[in-house]
Length: 148
Image (cartoon, rainbow, N blue to C red; front, side, top):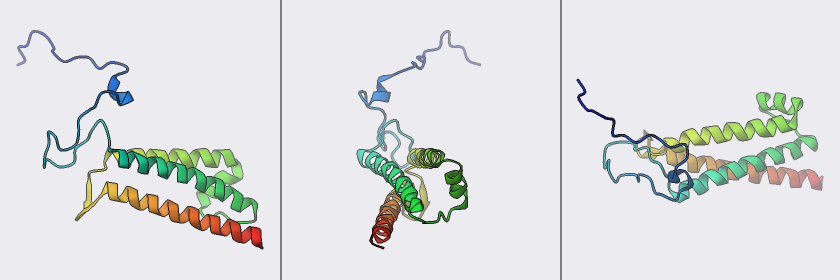
């Protein structure tokens, strides 16, 4: 039975300094060394740069896809083709929202081990490399279309 006379926990404020990055939150492995995946308040700068680059490349991919389609290309993803036929704006918004939500989930779990030495953060870098490759391929397609 709980015999405390008062609750000593502070209430969570609507807005706090942790959200602006002014006050540093818990860091990984400071308190839980070797205790498995740690969920933190603040993420490493290189991880945030990776996420921002993926989102920017996703937006560039959407715009290049629309340019390729305008030049006579065909969308191979049937779901995205339906969205593009409905509205190009809906396609871009849905693509960016889906990419962003997936990235939020992956960043939260960036220390989770998938297999052997492969962590989710390594998967994020693979996604970044994949988007770089895709955008490069789309640029080559657009230049070939303009030369033809």
